[in-house]
Image 1 (tube, rainbow, N blue to C red):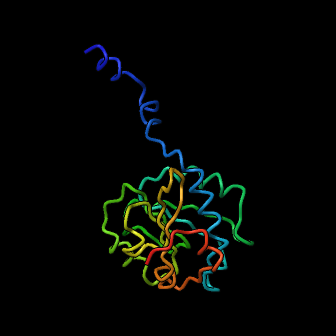
Image 2: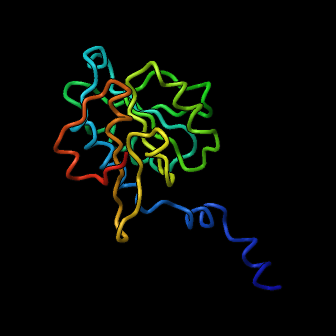
Length: 169
């Protein structure tokens, strides 16, 4: 009983810190490097390079840090958060946080007319429509790549990326 009482008074930020994704830095690095291995249509090479996040992702902080120091060619990064599918606007990449419960088919339908690289973090999503899906393999962060899903979004995939990915059809 004393333990329950004590735990209820632990500050919330400390309790939330226990749920931090320790791989967020690695994933942000992957996201940045993906910009080098995919080619977007010419119309996407003007303005900012936009990375959208659907849901609550621990990547947000890391991506904001990255955006303050990195560029894609001459494009600055712009990080946008979307609370729901209806709020999604045109972006180069869309990261779907693990807490999102919206069916993947609805998300794909929303971005279908855009050249958006869809990045997810749930088992099986690369087979269901995502181009990139973060996974853990041999206790290390890795990613699955579904090349045909990327090509459906009018994105060209570098052959160099194929050797780095877990290929999924």
